[in-house]
Length: 86
Image (cartoon, rainbow, N blue to C red; front, side, top):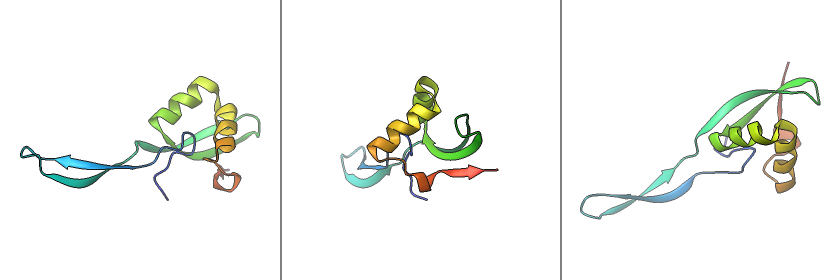
């Protein structure tokens, strides 16, 4: 499972740890991801998505169906990546 938000497309960034003496070593800034279950009213089923904290805010603001439609248009969400839960 890759650490990518399926709604916003956010993924890990690369940066530096900077010590007090300004010595730099590489590090990774991971995304704040959650495996979250949503009820998809249009399809009458439960689905599971990898969503970042910002992705949750997008879903709360626009609704699940609109957020998923925008994510699939931008290429972040594919139909085969959606896990349907019984």
